[in-house]
Image 1 (spheres, helix red, strand yellow):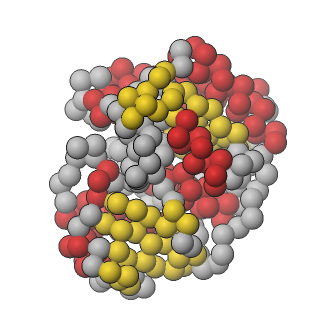
Image 2: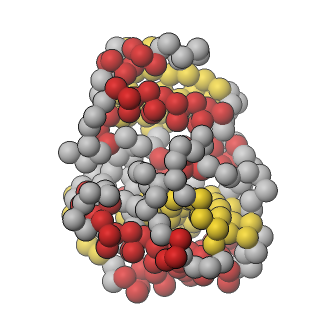
Length: 275
């Protein structure tokens, strides 16, 4: 059984602030250790469920957060960037399930470190008219590849967002949001035990959801009208208003195209993710 772990950082046990998850943050080194421990708990759960091949994709920020020597030896790590499929790089239909570790809620939600891919730069996103963030877009893209999302870990708001998207996915809340930079934390050992147990049982019960319409329509509202204007130079991208663009296409190709949008936006802005 081949299992794919997509690992973000904002939803990791114990982390609540930009200083916990950004490479220049004063608590970043502690944060990356906490990240590795959540991943290792998920790996142990996958092994208990019978996994024979486990791929871990470091999907946060610079994508060089996880130290190979800190990971369970059964896992193979995909590290660094650029990756043309970003948070799902390397995922194919050869995998039986996806586990999302350390995920967070979308832009506008009052979850811990909530945003959609680019901090303040992306204000809102919709997939076929449905509000979406990193959770929903990853889920829909994995489904298009024929792979179900089995488990998601993060704060309670991320878990609620996943359940709204697909109630069959097992979720583990490792903290409970009080605000965007404050949370009640589950004890680390308790949280990791819960992750391990959820993965070991959730993989057995995972099922592929109904696919999104083909082609799908992705709509993104940017903070900057300049970004929206520049993106209209990409064939197939059209404007809904001065700051909102959309395109249609089949997933996962649309997900990959969205990665190009983000690279264009990053080249035009210099905004910190959590300012």
